[in-house]
Length: 191
View 1 (cartoon, helix red, strand yellow):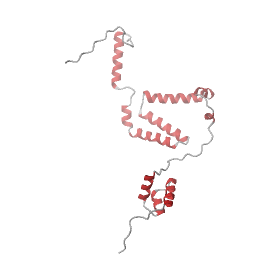
View 2: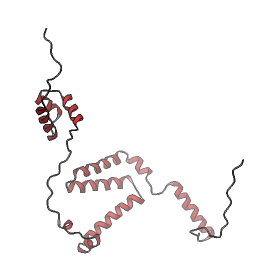
View 3: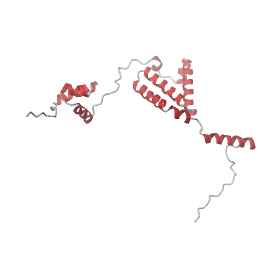
């Protein structure tokens, strides 16, 4: 009776080095295992133990900086040189202001999508992917976001109505309590 050995043959250090190079070059574990006569599990285990990491993105060589980045000018100098940049800056500020003070799921989704598009346009795929994940997450929970997102809570509106009524009744309210106002003594614990 012939007995088969379930264990694959051990690879030499040279074979493991070649397998590692193939792995880092982007070949799949199944392809490498078949190529070197071992199991996919062995390849994955060795990759995990030795910390083989494939970079998701290898940036190419950087070209020359565009003219607007070549010189170190301030924002004001740039806007004076090209007034259209002032409009871009104002639109960006308005967009961020809206996100801070009157947030909505739609605004956040549009802002994140715009950031993703800008990063993709300037060859930053990792940042573009991160922004697109935010777009997807906001899209998935847009119902609760739209109904829950308001700059003020219900209690804030009640406070504002109360202050308006006080102003109508007593006139202008002081911004600070008077300095000569007596301070109530703190209650002493019973006991």
